[in-house]
Image (cartoon, rainbow, N blue to C red):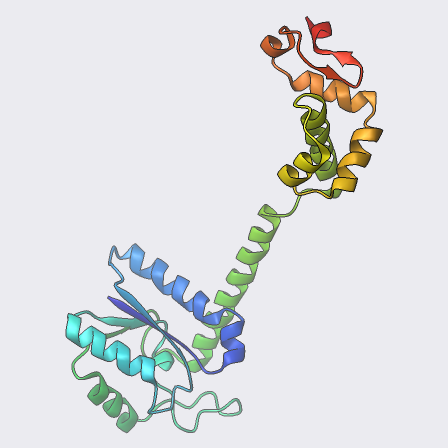
Length: 224
């Protein structure tokens, strides 16, 4: 099965509507345990007779003997008089016949009922948009960057550890951690005993018993 997704203008496409249609169709097809072999994406008016990707989708489906699915019938075809102020108008019988001629026997399928009203299609698209925004919001929250204070403490710990334990130069630490050399030098110079104790707490018992390393005046042997 092949998928066909279309939006009328680039503004809608830039909002992610094509990707939303594509995801919607993929989930529906997966539920039916069908395999999608190719996706065709189009930006253009549904009443245009010059939709290159639609023609390419028809040709591909015909040559490979697969059906072509889209979200709703208006993705394949719009009435030539369709506009923002005339959204309820449906394609005429002649327009559907011309589409069938262009498809040349390709099986066309829609996720929604083919004769669903334009109002119901818009309601469905609105619901899809809401789901997309909710999903994006949840994704942003799950990947939210850690608070600056926590990030600074984590990096400070690594800086002091690299300097005191491995005795690396400021330049080496700067490269490894992606920090300015001046920041590394400042953090090492101002590290207090609490940070040092925090580092010591993370050392393994075996390492601390080796007697190697001094941290801001604290000997690793002291933990034994």
